[in-house]
Length: 212
Image 1 (spheres, one colour):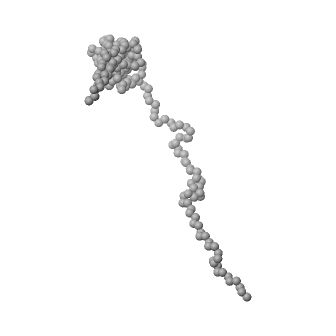
Image 2 (cartoon, rainbow, N blue to C red):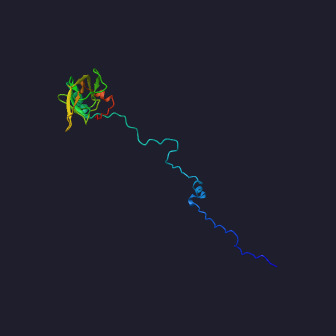
Image 3 (tube, rainbow, N blue to C red):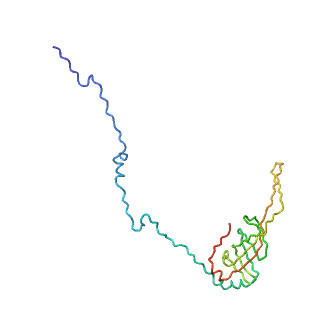
């Protein structure tokens, strides 16, 4: 009697696939670790010195003082004497240029002033010197505008003669003619007045800055 032969294990069967390796992401990218950062809300302790939320913080600096600075004692003493003498002169500054003026003088500015027409009255507020025959008041560097009033009237506009300048380049026979005719504003000083102490003390100080 013939019996079938038993095959040893592993023969005649398909080979088993090799076990696949699973590559896990780093531990800080795992969901469990990611949730651990947001699982607990941050605790913020309110400081006693900090103001409550919703209310603006109180101002740290005091508002600027609006009091009028007092004049020097020597100015209070000599200003009435300067005001008593007539024929005052003033050194006015227009665009950082000084002009020595007195009542009735005509001044031709070295530029055309925009926005003015003949007949307009201008007040010159930037001055460094105010004086008479015996007294002179000097500013550091400019005078307080409360001490004086200087007004000038716009007389008109003057134009210089036409000027023609020839321009050429080296090794070039072409000559270019450039024409220029500038216009200037003419002012006439109408009033130079020294104010009294009562008027000065009744007004606030005005800061004077030189024009650029």
